[in-house]
Image 1: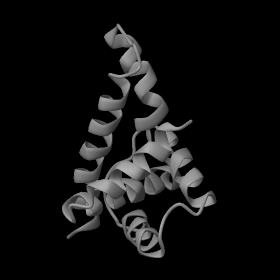
Image 2: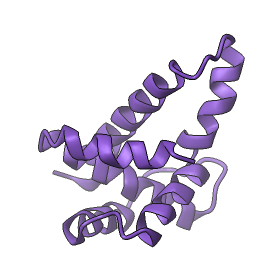
Image 3: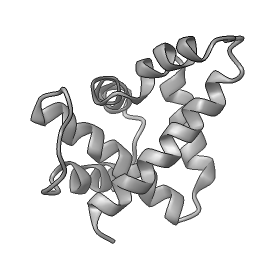
Image 4: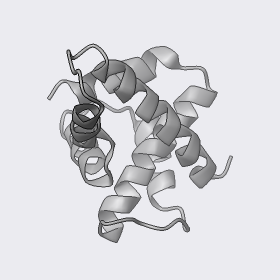
Length: 118
């Protein structure tokens, strides 16, 4: 599948997991949900969390290859961020999308639990 299509899917899965996580955090205002979600869902924060995953050697070689495929894909528009940050975030989303299509929900959960452990 096209890496950008995987990233599109992965973005939705990633955001759903973050929204589900935030609903357990005793937040009572929608404005506060939005503010807190930026710690996880912006391209800048996704790059930060990806760098944490890589530094901790949390990803397998196969997962890194999928990430790189998404990172190196051409296309898409970046919003409010530099191209490197955008590409790294796209790579992370591509990985999540690939894992979702492979029905590897346990691995998605492991990665996302690592990400929300700030």
